[in-house]
Length: 109
Length: 116
Figure 1: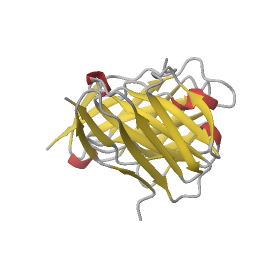
Figure 2: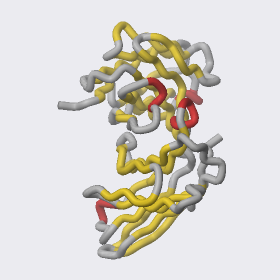
Figure 3: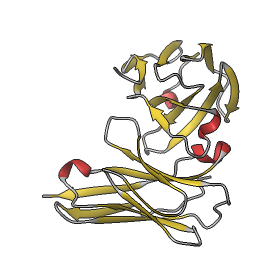
Figure 4: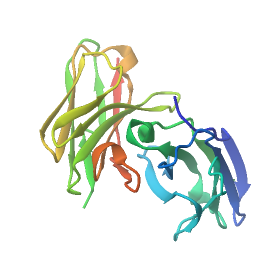
């Protein structure tokens, strides 16, 4: 079973900031948090990974509170091309490889 | 260059047939995986190989047999195909075993298998 819980779907409009929160209450001390993006008819693609506090790259930011029981993927100023399914994974070993249901983000013009 | 490539991309076959899906990665990774994504879009791991050795074998019918001739290749052979095998099969790789913390998993584009 996936160790994470995410909203099933979210809607947004172009230009808005989108925040997708993932709950991982049983995260272990050595676990990293990794987010993947999957477009229709493609394989998942790595977006961002973090362990604590905040991580930012050219695509997104990842906010992790001190207790690490949740994390928030932030997509600034989304466009239509950001319409995809976003998966949050936590853990190490085989747990790391379990994808949950993901969050289906639909961006409207 | 495609990092993880798999062939064929589309495959339509009849029940009872045997088919193979090939996968190659040019990233120099030690670990390769096969995932299955069904019609409900759940992505489930099937197998994982590290340096040609099987390290993860989830509850998969033994009609599915992975083969890794070298660490850059992981092929999936399926015997006696059934209607329920219809799905998208993704090959993936990572730098070290089981995608340890700090590593990421790179996926191929998927192979769409339809059993009729």
